[in-house]
Image (cartoon, rainbow, N blue to C red; front, side, top):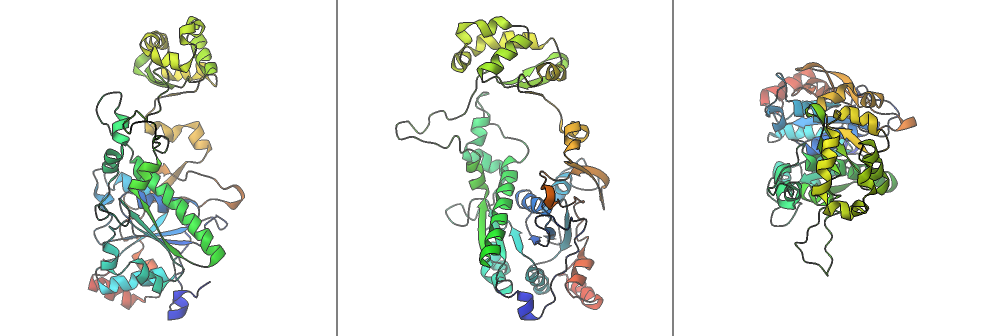
Length: 413
């Protein structure tokens, strides 16, 4: 492998304290610098932390903009806390020469750097790939953009909801109501983050085999299109504007039940359809030859659904969950808050107890996967702005006098 930049320049390697990390986790020993803001990039870096990587959140003096979004959590931004778990934090002014110097020291001891600046910005700040490759030749450099690194839209800022609208997601979501509708939950952002975490893992594997780093790019546009791969098929024999959505018919969907509750039912196969009719007390529906295929049921939705919904009013959604069991795929509609006490969620370790410097004790999402013998990184709270400045600068080799000078210069708030 190429010599490390810190060896070439005589700098001490960055000794990142592996806070609460399992020593044999898959990415233990991998150091990641998260310069990204909002949700997509930070969520990718959180996934890497879940796999055991040591992640440092590098923010401007004013902090990630997501910190300042409206939140019902009084002392902190709920979205920021949720998407920046298991990271330490340092605040740096990259427009200041000494702030850039600190970043270069961080890069010299890191394996991965992630940012979501518009394509023209990194070169202006002196943190483009050619510049940082000189500091760390085998760096995995990751640029997350709205629309890609080139093309007529490249310099535009990308936002989840904008991409939903221009890529067809909002139109498809609102098809039944006749008006476009946004998917809540920043689905494009989170999917882009998952793609980025996967690409970084592949790049690290490539570096392990070949000894070389590389620059890689993920865009929100690419993520929005990848999410619609089942719809993005245009045969030569059909018009472009043909309906492409996957619809299973009015039976499969969300239905009202007793006490203002709702349940989702999937009855696309003949077995599930027959089971559904029997369990709701309407076996005649299953016996009717007019409804014996999915296509026929779709064409006769207006006949079937009123009968089905009248039957479902006999019980609440959670009661129907028990009645249907495994015989009909189903799920009562719940608020996300119920997940904190879900036996299945708790069994899988998806929620952990943490403590945030500003928000205090809380329960939050821990990780989405388990790696068996390899072990998982242990979740801890997102950092307060600049929370680890002193410790990280000390690890980089700055003495107390130099740290005080960095503060006086404004490079470090």
